[in-house]
Image 1 (cartoon, rainbow, N blue to C red):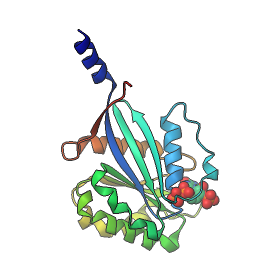
Image 2 (image 1 turned 180 degrees about the vertical axis):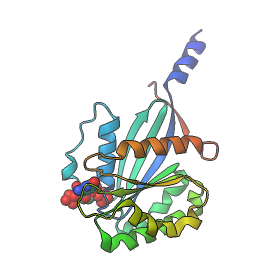
Image 3 (image 1 turned 90 degrees about the vertical axis):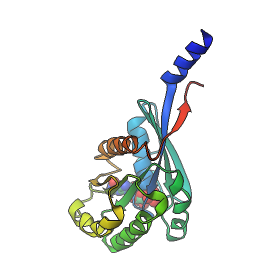
Length: 203
Ligand code: G3D
């Protein structure tokens, strides 16, 4: 009886754990996006003030639970010298959130190049990617179509994986919910090829 109950208990509290990388150039808004996500999805999360976040150096980690799915985020530094570390995380990841600063026209080409290099990595083959055109709250910023036309040059490397571009404001939260919902659907759909880690959350 104990075994049966404990099995049931484990089943009820089981989480499918997916690892999601948050990548993009420094200052794109990666950490702000992660904090906004934790604030929206974790009921009791009292994070830092979003306007006080400074650029990612090293690694920020976050976690949210949506039903039986757990997303573990790795927000990696985007400075040029840190980009060489990104690929150390590719093999373990189930999805990528790539953040673009829509107000930084000068570095848009650099951002696309970093994206293009990332997407051709074999270790990321088939892994769903969402590109966030961030800071859409800023007047005069580049719109989604403008950014898309540049990033579309990577279409052949993107191949048949799930890939989408979404306009967001990590600061105000616009588009954040939709982005997370999309990535959850995609990593679940892709799980026969990249199975989640099974986590017993009862303890
Ligand atoms: P990073 O982690 O990619 O390096 P951060 O980027 O999250 O640290 O954000 C860099 C700067 O962009 C921060 O401003 C942050 O407030 C701002 N930012 C991030 N997302 C948005 C957004 O959606 N809209 C606007 N208007 N600003 C955003 P500071 O001034 O602290 O450098």
